Length: 288
Image (cartoon, rainbow, N blue to C red):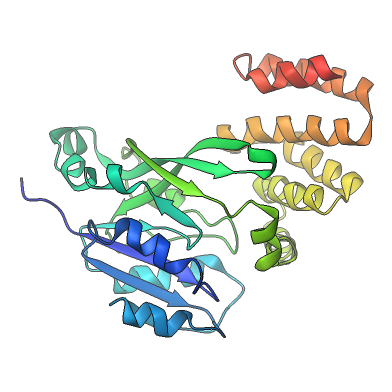
């Protein structure tokens, strides 16, 4: 089977410091790079063009989905990969991606998307490990949804309910959660504004309560953060399982920060009953 072509699509704004390292990590495995710039005032656009990418300049419309879909419109590869400028794929592992995409299992198991192993650098030298969906077959029906924490999976399932998301043993390193980078892009206030807009538009989407709780916790607005975690967990409905377990954890972490240990113990019993293999919940219960 011929090796498939890959389009890299990115959204950037004022990323001249980080963009070369990100692109350098995948330059050898992608066949085209599409950069959607949403209003850079530094040298990002000039640098991107100098690196041979296709640059699309568009105004910021308060929606990551709109910007991401603009990049999808231009992609010509068989597969579409998306990264942020503060992310870097393991160069040594990246070289096996195209070969993995030729495996018979990709077709036999109806795999339409690919997850990667992400290593998120946190303060104090801590590292969070998580699997994230970052590649999809190039189909015009597959579109991102959501102003922030945008997702493409819902549209994929709507078109093809039997499709699967596979996973490859390739690591991506991300330092965007470090305080210096959150402050650099003013991510917290930006995300808070977009999440509030999202909740006005979709008041029953519990995931927006969860994400808003995260941002409020980072802003030390603990009472409000707790309210939104409770709202997210009151009627989870179609809440994705990975977010649901995280919401339980972050509610306990918020209570711990507030010194409300009795409530921690009470809530932890319910959380552990739902997620008996989630060791972080036992640790938090023990702390309480």
